[in-house]
Image (cartoon, rainbow, N blue to C red):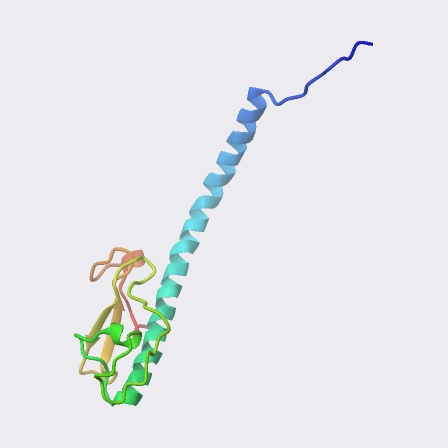
Length: 140
């Protein structure tokens, strides 16, 4: 008996057509996805700013003051026996950086709030518009 073997396989042209279709679809979807990614980073940073604000208010209730600039936000997740009334940590883990990997800026102020927390946005520099705009806890 003679066995006939017929192998079926994709031709190089068929593979090229499929790869081209995938490339076209990716080029249509990727820009929309990247826009959503930046929006998510802004929302994440704003949520972290709110979290800091709550922790700072708890710190203030326990100690009667907000942290100094030298203590900074670090005092919210680092145990301290040197601060009278301290009952922290007020945050479960360090949160040094915003969603873009830039450090948060903590400043004592003389306004009604007593402090400000700032993210310099995507570019990490003060000022800017759009994706590079600064975010503050007090901006609405």
